[in-house]
Image (cartoon, rainbow, N blue to C red; front, top):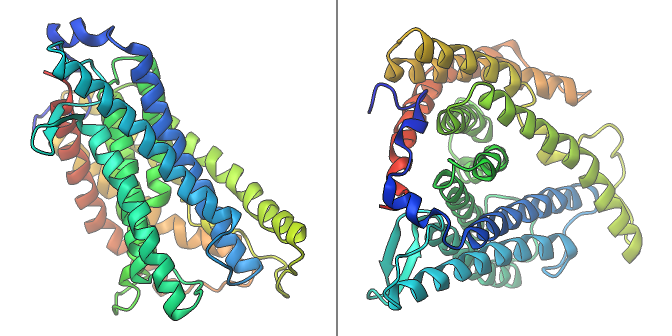
Length: 379
């Protein structure tokens, strides 16, 4: 790992060849990138709505508006990715330079297609999501309509969505020398911070020292915050990512209950009893004190940029500090948002202590991914 990679990621900018192709299909590059991001955002909104629907109304059928949002989001990302693959393949077959579209062009399916790396990953995630949707339909037709997240079909769906979101980050990382690419990273990172812990529900049947979803938040929050700040390599990047997460949290906090109640009223279904004082499920799982960790990351990255501190050590320290911050504040967040919640002191201590090794791992992975992503730029 390069000692200057996290604070100085812009040093790995594209070379002359990338500059030659930068203007080629510039509009297509922007439309494709924002199309994939739009799909992930629609999916996130659909998931928050669907969870709220299950909490306030109960089990439903496969064909509901929240499910439509979930599947249409993946479809949007999938078609945007496919369009970029078609453009890259057409250029390759015509003997023209492959335009800069979102990552290193990869020859797939017997070299019959040329797929930019970011779109290949995003498109594969979208295709798998639609495929596992059929599995989910079959699962429900056999076992009924459940309201839990850790069924095999649900976990497969969540992993597929996460893959599409990772592809979105790769696409914008390949264009981070443009302002729209930097803005895309600021939006794409918080979406994945929100979604990445959800597949950890698959571990609910294990006897872990803490809730696996909380452990996922403590791991993925710091890792993605560090990754985004290092990719942008600008003062205030971590704070911008945390602020974007806060804006998403506020929007979903309002939208999810409103959408569930409005939809239930429209189709004549009653709400469950005893809903007073219950916060929306997905927004409450978003770390609202990430801004505190972002300030710490900014300070540590400033030391690396201006005082010559070893970046490999800085990202580890940043991960540990961020892990501890989230480990301390997230149980308090749950106590604050759930009026009837009783968070034991032992739980706070356990999660905080686990935040140290998880944070160190997050810092290590965030630094590694930062050095890997410049390699996805077109040669």
